[in-house]
Amino acid sequence: MVQEVAFALSVVDGHAAGLVSTAVALTTRLPRTLGLLDRGEVGGYGAMKVATATAWLSDEDARAVDAVLEDRLPGRNCDQIRKAANHAAVMADREGAARRAERHRAGRRLSIRHGETGVASIEVEDGPVEKVAAAYTRIDREARALKTGDEPRTLDQLRADIALDLMLGGQGGKAERSEVFLYMDLNTYLGLNEDPAELAGHGHIPAPLARHIASGPDTVLRRIITDPLSGQVLDLGRDRYRPTAGLDEFVRVRDRECRRPGCHRIAQACDLDHSLPWQHGGHTSATELIDLCRRDHRLKDEPGWIYRLAADGTLTITTPAGRSYDSTPPPLHEPRTQEPPF
Image (cartoon, rainbow, N blue to C red; front, top):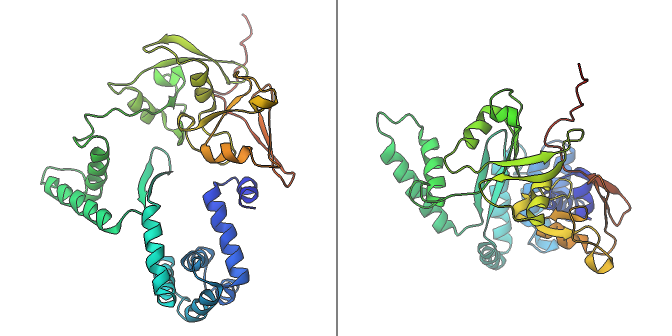
């Protein structure tokens, strides 16, 4: 069910799971919250907060919380709804809340969320509250120490810069090198046009920002050979500062991201998989290999899921419900027609 919704809406599984679980909760054990939603007294996001806060409760306790909240939710914003629902849920099952807190702390993880052009967010999810609070206090203290009269950055900008610097080596980011993949036309790099470039996993960024990133002291430039008519990758040029890693690298550069529609995990963090399983006659070649994140790699092997890769690189995924979705690596440039001879 979750994967079917994810494919239909072209969203990641986590978001689809939230939509499905909220719908199930509202129609089975949160009837009063559903009534508030129907009357427009609570929005969809607020209703999702109630469903999330009560997901761990028994049906009986969830209905009791639903009744308590009916008069407390109208007129409140989403954050107020979240706090009210969490408080009511803890009061309904205090022992269960303690066990839930322990499980949540064990589920801590680091996530990245891509925003508008040229920006992204990184977050430690479900970190121990005492460590998160201590980390913020340290970052804030260092930011305030740097906020002198001649410092042009705001405190918010300083806190963000210090946090990233600490994560990149603890010395202002100078001791650590990181790897990102930027796709940019040569003419854009040379400043002959202002076509946007693509940062793998993030999306398109303006040409000036792309040139700024590409001009870094540790930047490695790579020539990529494309089909002029389609813009698809044909080969990785050998004229580069480091030797090619072969087929594995070619497929990752070609795909850029997980090939499942709606998933934007960068290809370099994905599994390389056969579109046709090896044991069923698949071949280890560029025409049969695709990048799939670990979750979608496992989903591919579930009963009822069919993956077919066409000669032009189009991947067709058929779900157990019989719906089909296509995925094609976007071209590196717009198709170019040969100019007529003079």
